[in-house]
Length: 581
Ligand SMILES: Nc1ncnc2c1ncn2[C@@H]1O[C@H](COP(=O)(O)OP(=O)(O)OP(=O)(O)O)[C@@H](O)[C@H]1O
Image 1 (tube, helix red, strand yellow):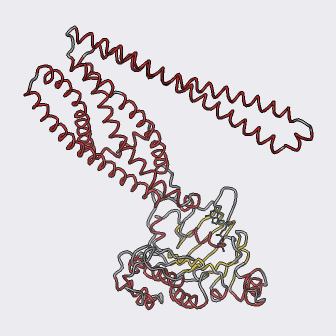
Image 2 (image 1 turned 180 degrees about the vertical axis):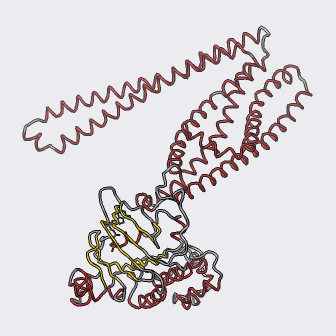
Image 3 (image 1 turned 180 degrees about the horizontal axis):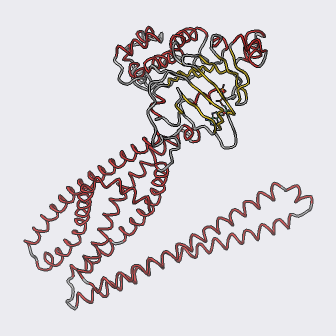
């Protein structure tokens, strides 16, 4: 219920509209209450007294009441839906903001579908809770209260009698229903027993025959059959009893009401029309009670969705700026990683005691077997994850002390697979720097060897990419990613197996673009093919989360360790299939 109150906070900006909506709902519901009243006048004035004026009044008022009901019905639907939709967009926005701020570790643990379901299904459930259930609750509530009020107004004594008798009948039906349900379960169990007995004795017929136990089995079956018969008959007894009992109880209660009402009419304490109107109200009481019970059930279900939504909104955000975090000034690109230990899960370290000192403008390469921890080191520099031990600093600033945005603004990443958004090529490249002019975007595309293929697309830079648009090849996507990075102009660059998914031909074009991108920037290259990193200033060989060796290509070859082993697999032994392993 606490969360329902929180949900109401989201309605607060629309309180005036909500008040108006409730007025509309109540007026529309009140129009429903007017109809039995018309019957009263019809019987008492028109039929009994032959009052023609009253007949005209009644005819006109029926038209007017339905007109008013229509207008207010429109008002209630429009206003309540307006509030519901507004609340939904507000909650959706809060959730979307939340997800944008959540750390990478959250997305590692939760599947995309799950996250999307929060924003789509659960938020939609909130809308239904607010719109449909709210309308129904107020409408049926008003009809219930209105009907009872009308009944009391017409005859309080008869109302008292009705309000005592009807719940009694309801209670009796409930008790019967519960018994029936329980007995239904017994019947199902008995039927299941028969099936399993059948299955057992037929499938084991060999055993039965070999022990000459046919008669024994028949007896067992007969017993089971009798039990089944007894349960079925009990059910028949109950159901056969239910209908006449309920009808009898209903008849008795109606007799009480009609009897007492009739007595009052004869005695002149009540008019005939009033009694008819009273009975109409009384019969109509059943609907709002039933619907309110349904609203209650629906609200319970919606609350589960509301709880899930708020659980997401309340998630802690472990990676956020320190209170006194400063903006990282424009950096040179001196990256120092000191004794870093890190694990995605508690107790399992993906990196242990990793240290690197990378001077501005240097090119560093990470090589090593799959799962060694190469991407993990790269993930820690933009602080996608929080390290467990040691420190990472850039130009002497510990990355935990600076504003996250100012850190990530100065780091460019070209991943193995480039995600493009379903918008134009121009806008996709501009994602690298939102205020870049068209000319700057085109310049970046040229530097990334992408301009020529873009110009050949159906609408050039205005071609839309994506599911319904055009799909680009892996090499073309990588060049778009490089153009993005060029536009961003970061001082630190991370190339995470940027060419490994490409064929040799497009790899050459992409590699050329990457080579020019890396000039003057501190670059971390995760390499699959060693040929792309021969000229790195330092090559770090990672294995099992630790740095095993480092040095230049020549130095490492001379050492004759893991690197030279990998080199021999790729170039010496000619075993291309083992590349990167
Ligand atoms: N998001 C994650 N959540 C949990 N464990 C992870 C996650 N990413 C990587 N790991 C684990 O951390 C270890 C290092 O993985 P990492 O991706 O850094 O290796 P890699 O050297 O880049 O491998 P590859 O060459 O296959 O990309 C592996 O054991 C991997 O299973």
